[in-house]
Image (cartoon, rainbow, N blue to C red; front, side):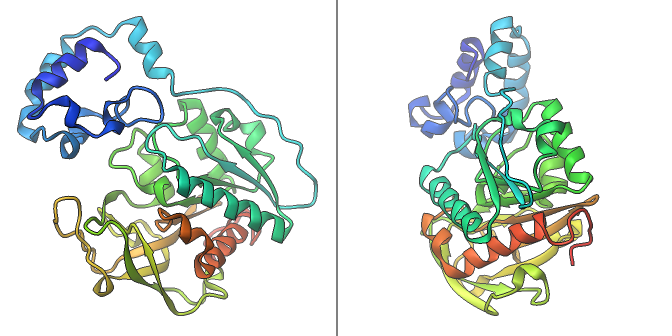
Length: 327
């Protein structure tokens, strides 16, 4: 979408007018999927069949990549290093909000308000940034955990990825919510396969939001402390391509699929059977927590979910910091 010549090839291949595509796919200004979605992963949005992709790819490969193309492709990155003045003697959290893909403003805002309120209640020091320049060894060393607030898109450069991975493996803490694990494709395999521990498949549709029963899977885990055995809530429920248990995750909570309709964009079944919805992973000496709950702003004020997130931050940042396994 950033190259007029490539866009012409793309438009010619579409089975329907380009004006009918989702706005997020047509835009070239961040946040947008259009500038970063590979053709092979855009079929569900464009209607282009898999068997047509090789011919389209062959045409695209004939188009030279210009200096202007390289500049436009890299425009989503930054190396602006923020400076923080954090008080000593408190758990230190970095709340990260750079989004270059899909941004759901209400959920991002509600999550931010909830995280800031948790920090105030618990005496945590928290810093907010949209700058990926914070992901360097010196800056990361100031923090006990980072929180990815519904992050979508390709946000870190190669050196920033290396800094984040090294920091995690040496005892950092990660808390990610909802959209931070909800991409249909990734340009950095370590992030979904290791840090998150599962790849997004689809979310429910028709209706988009449904009530479902959330069930605590491991009642003895520190993150489950204070939670009821189960509760009902409404959200945009995610399904994943593989069960995170297969990656070694410790499951905190699952969904009872009998309480809602697990069907995707075209009515296809996205049932998982055993359906984890929140879990932890060990990343070397570091700790990772991911929850797929959190598209609706209301989820960040529901008492059970607030309790879970607050305990997850404490677990990632302060409970036996620098050690894993997770209990």
